[in-house]
View 1: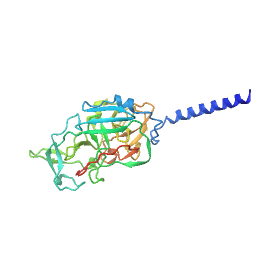
View 2: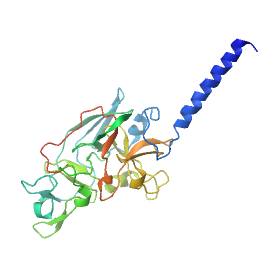
View 3: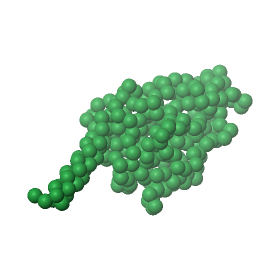
View 4: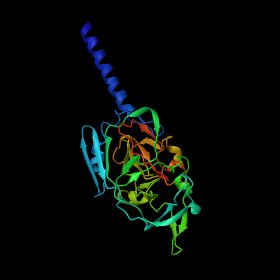
Amino acid sequence: MSHRTIITIRRIALAMSSIVTVACAGKMSPAEPASNAAIIASTEPAMQTAKWGTNVSVSFANGMMRYRSNGVPNHPRQTEYALPRPGTPPGRLSEATAYASADPTREQSYDFQIPLTPTKAAQSTPTNLGTIGVMISGAALFNPYEGDGTTVAMSSNFTVPNAAGKRIAFLDNCNGHPTPMGDYHYHALPPCVTSMVDVVGGPSHIIGVAFDGYPIYGDRDISGAQITASQLDKCGGMTSPTPEFPSGVYHYVLLSSADATSSIRCFTGNVTMARRRMPGMMHP
């Protein structure tokens, strides 16, 4: 065997070794952190087949998904909500400082550009008050907190009596509500949304996407078992197989918990678009 032939064989062996290493890297356990874009060449195929509501328009170009909707969820809402009385400080909303009002939800003009190749950031970014992601229902996702940035909406849910004496809730059965200005949003897992795409005992499917491009799911793993907060990272995400990504993907998981694990607390990925804030809000 010539010297040149030996060198060629060694190069082929090294190349095969690199291929095996990359292939093995894709088999990540749920406990491992988010990886880079090599794991997700593009979320476009999954986003194209997601069950977007008829009030949602999505289009794809230049590595971005354009999401447009009127912001009004395509599921039933309460006819009334508990809203803050004028002058109520952020995070101080309670039965004593709220009143029952007709649902103030109104149409928005959501138009967001979201990356289709999300990549892990060197450091996570805390989620802001206001819209941090969008859902297949056409409505927005907020972080777990009220307007003071510390009070957890799910732990401070309450009711107030309306004019007829009926108790009116702060958060509805979908774990959502409108701001006083009419922006409807969720603070936790919305069963009204998961019921549109999931079956009892089955896995969760895509119900939205965060502004860093990583998909959002409900609280069931690929085998239909319930996911708990202990399985999630500090932002509220995990890497595991899903129906849309059977080889595994980093994704956020919404829970119905009465604490800050209910929604996304920080962005794991790079946020390449301006985040939508809600100035003047009494709560997020």
